[in-house]
Length: 417
Image (cartoon, one colour):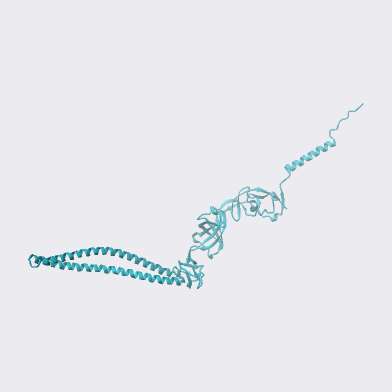
């Protein structure tokens, strides 16, 4: 009698197959969901600069270099050219307005001055002679009228006497008629002379006005001519300190050439150049600070020169209330903080080389275990020379790597050795 043989459900082959499938599935799940697939790099923590995210006072500013200049300067230029014949003051001397600084010799100009002066004096003399002649003619006309009036008086009395004699038949008709004609003729002469006197007076007044105008113009020209000669003596335009005044005897100077300057003793200003990126954020009255010899001095922008040269533009800064550091000198360079905002509480981290690689868009943040750091996107708002203001991506108390990332490549995770 045959036995029924039961087939085994779990063969060795089947068990091996199931184990293999399970192991493969577990490996696949591990690789996809469990294993850390981020690229990593082992680094020495001691070679990194780590900063803690803090909340502290923050002010946006940029450092700028300012050169010290006098607040007010008067420039001295040669009004006329010539050879330096004499020097009366030296660079650095305190001078007063009107003090003679140098004398310039210009032989050609001196000869020209003498020629023009001689010609002008001759013209002035001729005008004055013409004026005198007009006055003489006036008196001659007056003398003529007086003589005619006297002649009329004589002719009138003679005529009246002969009228009487003629009525008495004592004199002939001819004598009477001659006396009448003489009287009328003399009276007519007086009328003409009086009319001529009026015309002479009008003409004389016009000529006198022209002469006076010409004389005035000639005298003004004489003054200008002499003043031009006085320009050979270069004088100080103001009270102050003589600077950039380096001349030598015998040196030739041209018209308009710069000779030096007088710096007023009314304080100093700073002249600074600012990167053109900030041109839209700079305005007159903007505040700045200078730390000098342990003290802080307040300044403000007085003038902005909008012309951009080599990527920067120029500004003038004045000291508030003219409070100026003692010992500061013309030409000295000092560093100033130009502020763009007031002090506010902000979330900040220290500046570092990481910004050059990331542009401030991400940073390596330390894990709370302090065993590794990983990338995290952030957003930087404002900055100054010491700190970045963080607006997104970090929390107070977290630690970040702020040193350069140039040796990290594209790694997403840094593991500390």
